[in-house]
Each structure stands twice: as C-alpha cells, then as structure tokens.
Length: 140
Image (cartoon, rainbow, N blue to C red; front, side, top):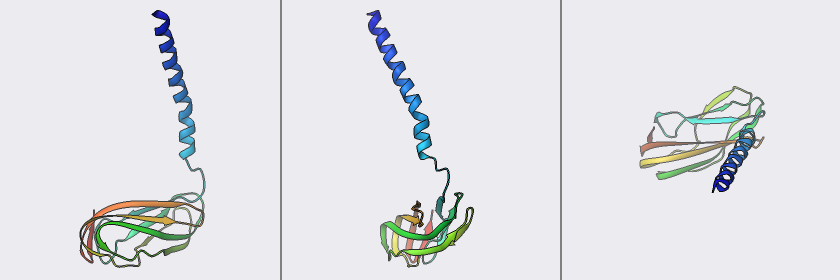
C-alpha cells in the first residue's frame, strides 16, 4: 500500500510539473510583440442616429486601410450593415472617432458588436448594450 501511495504522489508531481512547464508557452503564444493592434470602444450615453465609437492603434506599427467591417445587433433594430472606411492609415497611438454610416431605428434593449479590421490582418471587436426608442439610443 505504501508503494501505491508513492506512485500516486509521483504521478501528481509529474502532472503539476508538466502544467507549469506549459504555462510560459501559452502566455508567449497570446502576446503580440509588434505590429498594429486596434482597439475599439463605444462611447456611453445618448446617441442620434447612430452610436459613436473610438478606434485606436495601440500597437507599435502603422495600420493601413482601417475599416468598420461588421455590425451585429441583437434586438428590435433596423439598420443597414455596410462596410465603412475609418482611416487610410493610423500611426501608433493615433485614434479616430467615427460612427456607422447608417441610421439605427428600433425600440427596446439591444446588444451590438462592432468589428474593425485593417490591411495587416488585425481585427478588433467590441460589444455594448443599450436602449433605443426610434432613432434615439442610449449606450450603457
């Protein structure tokens, strides 16, 4: 019985060591050392006829041809989802304020996800919630 306990203890130690050794690899795989990194965020508060959002390049290289490529809305809202150019290029630490080139009309609560992309293959998505009455909306 003493040998079985030692085998179990050794197995637990080996598994723990394997998990600890794999941790730096996982962290290293999710870290982007260089290139453009886009960040998008909706402004809270009242909006008419479409919500405003801020796009910033928090990376260390220039992003080219930045576009709003997708808006997904869950709720009772009518809108026209069109691709929209935000900027030709965005240097590191540059930012821009924009809004979709479509009216949003509806009634009730909603959730919205906006996706921003650039030519370098980088994309960023941001989800927000709000309330809308006709073309007047309030972003939480």
